[in-house]
Length: 145
Image (cartoon, rainbow, N blue to C red; front, side, top):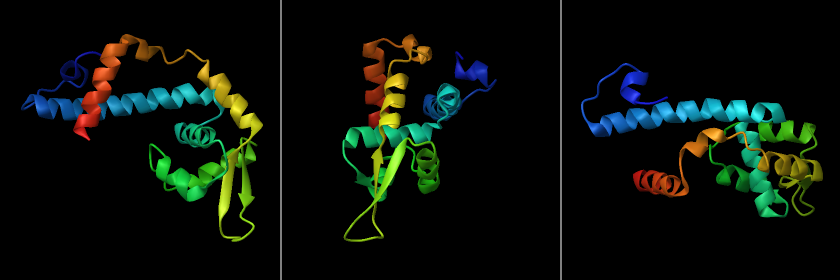
């Protein structure tokens, strides 16, 4: 990775087009790094996101709320939760008052897995940015959205 023009052997009409292509190219690159990072833990990035949401909630929450909070809106969120449930990383609880409502809670095993992931230092590609650069990047991406 370096200069987008060299990486994809292309020239751009202007810097805005170059930036757009660079964002898309980098998003794809990050996605592949993310998949590679979570593979040893037996998780997909979306499953990790669900576990992170549940840990942050600190109590059982409805499936719909999880879907709303996901970084990448997954139409297959229920299937992702089925897999997490099979791995005993989350637990489902039916609402006593309305059997159609299901609450999801992170299990002790799920919390332990997140703790293990949190202490991992395998995201070394982010070390290329210092704190100030990372903050600026976040500000620029927020501005773009």
